[in-house]
Image 1 (spheres, rainbow, N blue to C red):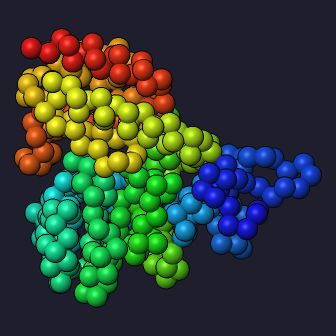
Image 2: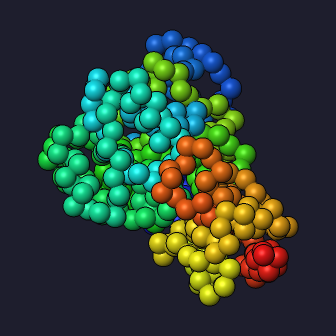
Length: 354
């Protein structure tokens, strides 16, 4: 490969077989639960050529070594497993729902202690790092879309001897490189932007620390939180167009955020200025937000995000969503449809609100 290829080139070419006569252009699906003994692989829970192609591509994009998992939450659980008994975990008050629930469960069972922070308050985050074992960051946060000073917080966490993990699902490695900002581990729900077609359930971790990689792989091997081979193949195929999908979604999200900010039915628009996720707060309250999500033809009412289709939902419909998230907040995941069609669909739905 050319020296220092750009991310868009890596997305297309990383993780492919060698360019040799009669080699397949794409890594084949290897359906095997066991391998001939004597090598590093041997058993299907320890590795698979199809997973490794996906891991090679994602690692190249993030600047580290990747490990594929059965889901994003499985990947997060392995990271939390690094924390010793009663160790302190610092995390955003507004985090992915699965992360919040898992932290709450571990704390209720006396496994860890938690400190939930406002990631926009860098001084408070730095202070919380003082006696932490692990600092978990999202930037942008889900669904409030707050931005953290990853570099400053990571430096404070390292000074305290804590690991730093950054969930990069929303930004993707095309828009943010957490390892370059000081993160020890990057986590992805590969279900979202990486695979990009709403047909894969998968997660991933990436680290540039070889010793930490070995620990994380050991935990994956032991817990069995491994992906299916076909899922890994689909996720890698999806990553080949990651740069095109992110570019289109971001362009449309920027335009929609601008138009929504001028609409009288919208009390607040939250958009960090990059990425394909926009959160809005309806002036008419929770009832208006629910009505909006049931009044469109193109926009799909569902909980996931990052696919080629545009989706949205009122986040407080989930019991575990923090009470500080407005009742009328709707998170929009902008897909790759024509922006004028997306706007027309939203506009006609907004016009129906009381």
